[in-house]
Image 1 (cartoon, rainbow, N blue to C red):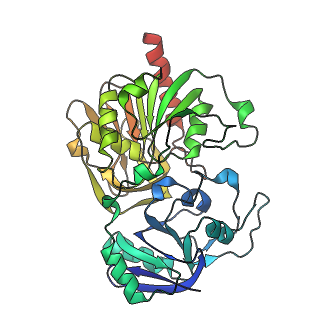
Image 2 (image 1 turned 90 degrees about the vertical axis):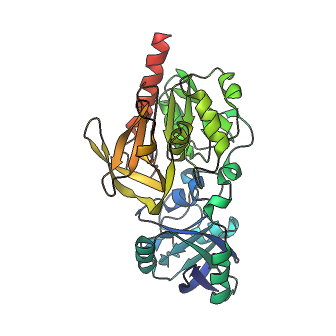
Image 3 (image 1 turned 180 degrees about the vertical axis):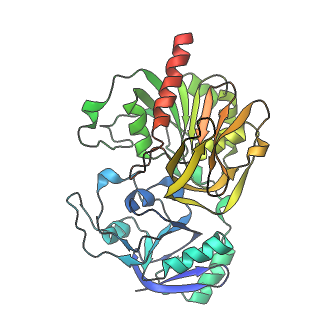
Length: 379
């Protein structure tokens, strides 16, 4: 079946459709990672977006349930240059094509992903339509222009859990045991409320690997409910959409600041900023890939990081004397981290938990554990 990509500026790209037959309207974005397509597809932060992968061949390692970051494909659609018809990895359990069919996600191969990436880098993120159901190019362009955009939907409300629970690596909620993971886990030293705005499974694994027991809460949980759970700290997860939309998370975090140590990642970083009264803005084409250089402004150390975000915190809007920018992106100078002057809350815009790597920034989980240790010693 034919597949088409239509952008709001009238551009139409044609290829071969695979996966689910149908169409979706979404924001078009690209990811420059060379590995990790399964983690990308199942990352809840991609809700409402069609992802074009710049790596020229996708699917050659197949699909393995242990590599999923959530319980379903979260991206609205997938665009690749070439789909590998044969997976050649011993961990493979299912082909990418069958996986997308089973998850009812449309995809297109055979288009010039390099040309699309150059267009998005030059002109900025665009609304678009991916169609594999015979829709005409003209109709697809019309539907792309009519789509309301990311800011019109509360995607956090779509992907968050329905009720709170204590995470068990052997349990059915956020499963994700990796090999002998359970044997390597240290004794539990802290209980932390993990506010789920679209959390990736590897975050929970890495928290637990530092002796932290995650207690997962829905994004709409109130601060009183979280404090009554007898937790030592609060973790703010990654997630999808415009960070200015889920104001209920802003309010909850605002009430938790100063009461418990806080660590935020990606959207969680933006939630902490909004709770402090700061502002966020939309990037021209976002940061999505595994090779973003970030400098720690305290130590001068540079890490190569995995990123997936289309918005950034305006550091000039941070409250003077209360919070400062702690990390900066060396490509474009945008804010990649903040910390409270009091030292009891910090966040980063990127993904220290990235399962495919790089792992330069994984030390933040130990830093959070050390912060909890220090607070406990003082009490």
